Image (cartoon, rainbow, N blue to C red; front, side, top):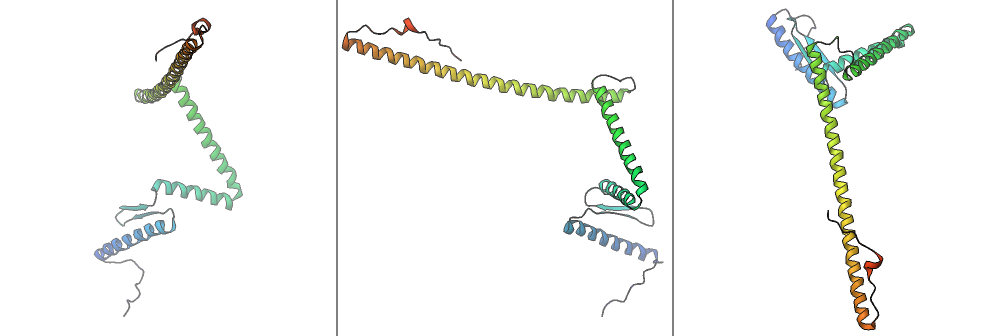
Length: 202
């Protein structure tokens, strides 16, 4: 035999009301999590109890869900009311101008300008940013210098090997000339009269 329908109205008994709240709250959180996983939906759920306690669940972050909700509501208002479209884009333009101003101010401060309005904590934060940037620049410079040194060593090794090969070939030619002289009696060619070889070590 199935259960009868429950009348949807406030539960007068405080204990029963708290038990029902806990059960229904857990159930709705479970359903919200399932919805987010099964349907790849971004879900945000907030519940305030009768005592004012907050319970929340979000599939990403609650701030992300709230920001997305606010933006979606603004877009809906723009579609519903053409007059609000101008205000929407005015707010967007003002926000972009403020971001640009902040970036320009931050750039000037990084260059050592407009520092008079900063307090000790802000100056210390700026100093930390500069030190972090300087460490990054130095690390990049050291990396490039090491790469150049390795490349120069590689080229020097190749030149040394080529020099050794040429020296060996000249010695081989000299030996062949000496043997030819023995067989024919012709004065051998002296390579030192026609060329010279620069030997060096890496």
